[in-house]
Image (tube, rainbow, N blue to C red; front, top):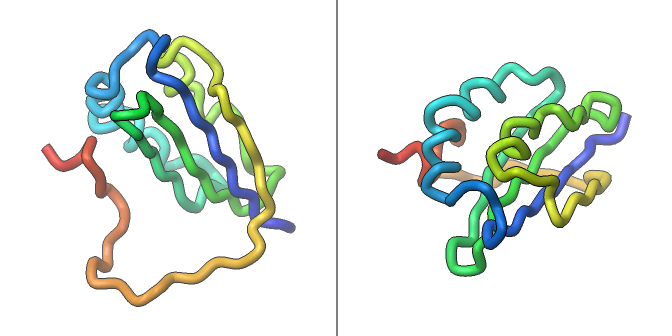
Length: 112
């Protein structure tokens, strides 16, 4: 089975919510709810405040397990489907040398 990478990007310019509200939702509900999605190996929520963009990068164990409802809450908060929705096969991956052992639960939404 091929590992699948999914990239979703939304414009915040005409969204129903703000980046601050998205960060609050990530911290208060979405991150915890997402930890139990079967087959989801890694999920990164990304933002570009100056460019008014919000996105998700996901790494799935297989295309069969890459279920769209995993992003249902983000779609609900933003009030629309993403402007960019792309899927890729993973060609290679590594874990480099790192200083922080724990990658989980890091980022601007969780720093407060």
